[in-house]
Figure 1: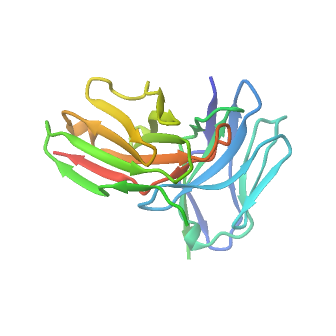
Figure 2: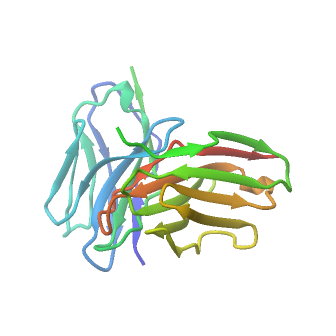
Figure 3: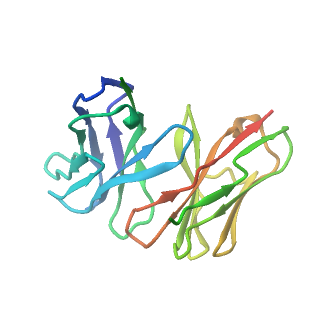
Amino acid sequence: GDSVTQMEGPVTLSEEAFLTINCTYTATGYPSLFWYVQYPGEGLQLLLKATKADDKGSNKGFEATYRKETTSFHLEKGSVQVSDSAVYFCALSESSGDKLTFGTGTRLAVRP
Amino acid sequence: DARVTQTPRDKVTEMGQEVTMRCQPILGHNTVFWYRQTMKQGLELLAYFRNRAPLDDSGMPKDRFSAEMPDATLATLKIQPSEPRDSAVYFCASGPSRGSGEQYFGPGTRLTVT
């Protein structure tokens, strides 16, 4: 079945540091890939998505590129802020499917 | 700015009591999902609906949980009787179209069963 594997957290960075959160996936078809973010006390929010190979999703300074050859969708940001502290979830959905398969989440803590 | 709303936001109840959680999906969305989030198990899909029809409730303990969509503007998740192990945050999410994978989450209901 489908699965998503994320790097274990927590990830602790200083403000303005470069962020990478690794995500790899296993899927039978041609999935769409997503990053969701959960701020403390809130529900998950869609951060960015990519629907086919080599697509780059971007939002709020975050980027991720759909790499079919390595089955990866790593999240990056060039300069993190304290306000980026949250839990980040990588997810996939099969084409024409409704359901999302989530990774376990990676907690990011950014120090001033 | 359309949002998914959930009520109540917090619920504390005693073991054995019935709990009903409500969700209003975003108008026009045709898929609705119920999730449970705990530190131990993470995020679990309990049930989902498309066009108000239940499509998958395999993640839900059938003996005590039930999920319904009486109309397009209301989804409910009921636990009867509740147990301490049901303590968790319950999220409702809605999605705009089949195959998009986009889900919009509500703020959650934090349930504590004592």
